Length: 150
Image 1 (cartoon, one colour):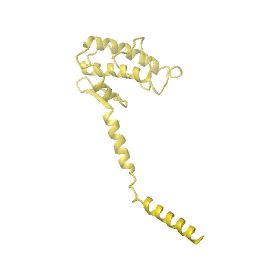
Image 2 (image 1 turned 180 degrees about the vertical axis):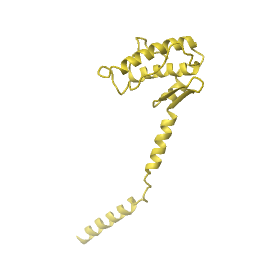
Image 3 (image 1 turned 60 degrees about the vertical axis):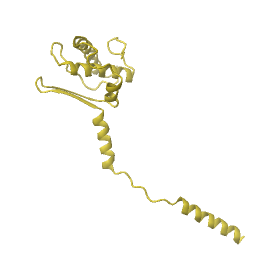
Image 4 (image 1 turned 120 degrees about the vertical axis):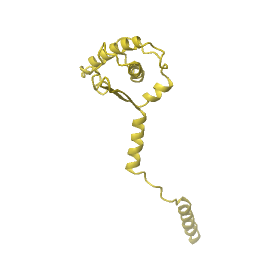
């Protein structure tokens, strides 16, 4: 009987020794917040023009990567095409913002102030248009009856 207890005691001590490990450092909240901030910064697209006093900030996980890897390259669409589509998309977007009981207010949070006739430049129109395409594909929405295509 003593041999059985001795063997059990020896096996539990050996298991304890083999399973001991040095303590792993716990990630501090500062490191976590820095990583989250870096992810947000990498998923943030900012377009600004001091001359016209406008700024567009798009914070959407995965959009920047999608824009660089999947979207049509700059110059593929004409500025006129982008302006026309953006005006239609913005109008529909703003209608959905005003109807939170009908459309998900988590998807349509803020109105977009995009005025027809103002030359925002190619870059703004390109990125805004591609955000609408990304949004529709990601959240399975359809703005203004157009089938979102890449």
